[in-house]
Image (tube, rainbow, N blue to C red; front, top):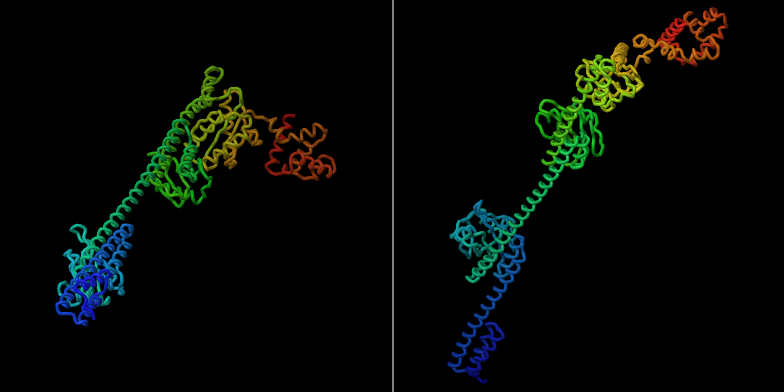
Length: 637
């Protein structure tokens, strides 16, 4: 067998190094030379070359391992840069640590400085639930020692290591996980430790120093990634808070702008003389829903919006809530109703009720409260204007009633000037009304209503004690009295009784017409005809008695006119038959005897009377008036 030269043997070892042969293959050249009977010097040279080649091979393997580790660290840095979720970052770190260190398990704990502990945050390869929930006080156990000292620590046998404080719950969790060898390195940001990164084996396999260095490099990357994730989360939270604050600022600005616009519009209403309905329209345009303006007694003055009316139950509830609102102030919610009081310091004028399902913010509630204030101001202005106008009207009507102004003694020019001042037309007829109401507590409201009504109708009104006197244009006193009784009663929510007289064209006749109207009102009250109106002509024979002009012809025409006309046209004796019939106590036989006619003739005549006067002419009240008319007709010849 040919023995290789030393140079040839060195080339063999270089070839082995070039193809990254295993350590066993480096023995083959030496074994072959010994088998070939090489000289001892040659064998010594081959052995030296082999050892040198093995050292080079080991260095190359270490370098390759280091390059792989650096590549893994570089890849990890790239992976962590792409992750923003803390759990995802920690999961990537422990998975990479376990693979690089070829460990059975890798895990990470993060420090909780407030609680003074480091808490298990992520594991890879764990089989114990108790281990995954582990909390380690700083200074206790291997992890607590590393977290407290900020120095790496490795143990070949955890359970028997006396270099750190053992705690029963920590040792139990480690034993359940069956861990033996553990390596822990701190995750540091500057001088501050934020957690611990671990690698562990379930057998006694110590970790080499270079593994501790590698795990420390992973921990450094992990600390930066965790801090970046924390800063990113804080930044995101700050941005969300800023966005929320900005949204609130925008909403607040919009509310303020809306409130300012509503305020400007309501101020304009005051300037140009709007009413409660105009205020309600502004509120519903801004806030939506339906707004009801109620007076102090719960009657609706104006409504704007969807026109959903308030029920009687809701009005009762609103009036109860309004009493609470007046003492507390502001707007109060009751179901889907927002209630605020229309009031002055000394008087309650009414209530605003907004029906809406929306929640009103502070600015919206202030809009509703400002609307109540503006409504109160408008009502006060209206009352002041009405009172001023009522004073002017009342002074003229008082002078007319007392005879201090007339066309003869006072001078027609002065009267006409005062009439023009209160928009009275001197060329139209007028009726005089005397209105009565149920209780003195209605005096103010009745006077206000009368002044407003008279101004709208171009008439006059005056309050005189418990009586309201009106002078209104028109030629139908009875019809006007009934209309005023109905409208005034509705405004007061109580019966109103109205007597009437007229029409008159000369205002010097106001005193006499007033006296007759008062007598009509007194008569209506005596007859218990509350909530009604009438003039003297409509009161039948009572009107004949109380009327100023004693209009007998009018009474006869209204009571017996059709019968008188029939007799005049046909030459019949219906009036004589009626007189005899009533004189015979309404007996048909006695009437026939006195008239010397057949009873059927009497029956036919009375049937004709029924057709002329109506079927109820024999009712007691009608019969009395007919008998009085017959007596008056006989007296007149």
